[in-house]
Length: 95
Image (tube, rainbow, N blue to C red; front, side, top):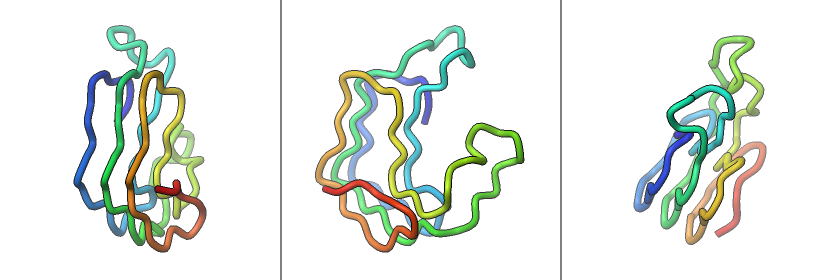
């Protein structure tokens, strides 16, 4: 999810991906949505996200290492809370 506002990402399961959740601000890409605010990621299960990253080479997402539980970059007025994680190979947020 990128360059969005007023999103509540709750009670989901992210399993068997390269990245569990990617919530980012991508500046300069979207003229109509230049910001990312009030995106809350809470009470989700984020497990076994260790697959290889298959993003096209040169794509901004290709640099993200597999095993990232939640990638959360550049947001304002947002919160991560109560998420449960299991076996990320690289990194992941605490609850």
